[in-house]
Length: 185
Image 1 (cartoon, rainbow, N blue to C red):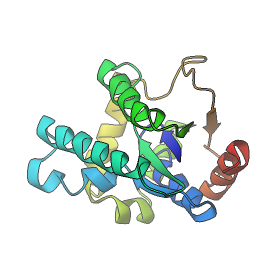
Image 2 (image 1 turned 90 degrees about the vertical axis):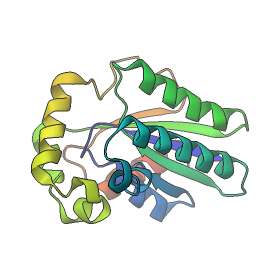
Image 3 (image 1 turned 30 degrees about the vertical axis):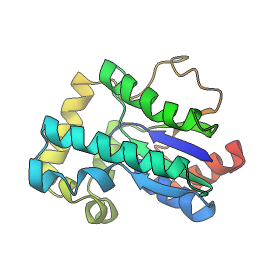
C-alpha cells in the first residue's frame, strides 16, 4: 500500500496533479473536496461539517489500507501554524504506518497571482461546487495568505519520502510525472 499526501495552499493544483498522477499510476485519488462538497449544503462551513469530514475520511482510509488497492492519493490544505492540522496529518499517516504502508509527502507551492488565476479555471469550478462563488473563494484565498502558513519552512517536514515542487510554471502532467519518477510509483 502506498499513501501519497499532496498538500499546499488553495488553488495550487493539488487536485489536478492528483488526477494526473492517478492516470499514470495505479493509485486512486481522494481529493479533499470529495468529502467537503457533499456536506457543505447540509452543514455549511461549520465545526460539525469539519468533524464529519474528518470522520468520513478516516473511515475511507481505514478501508483503503486494509484493501488490496495499490495505493491512494489524498489532497489537503495543511496550515502549518495550526496544531490541529498537524494532529490530523499525523493521525491519517498513523493509520497507514500501522499497516506498513509506504508514505510519500508532496508539497506544492505557487505564487499567489497564479493561484488566483487557477482559482477561476473551468475544471476547478466543475470539480468543486463550493468554489463556484469566485468572489468568496478569492477572498478566502487572500485572507489565508495573511492568517495561515500553508507551506512548510525549510527542514520542517522530516519524512523520508518528501518532495517539494514549485509548480508556478509547470503543468499538472509535468508535476505528476516528476512525482511518479521520484518515488518510483
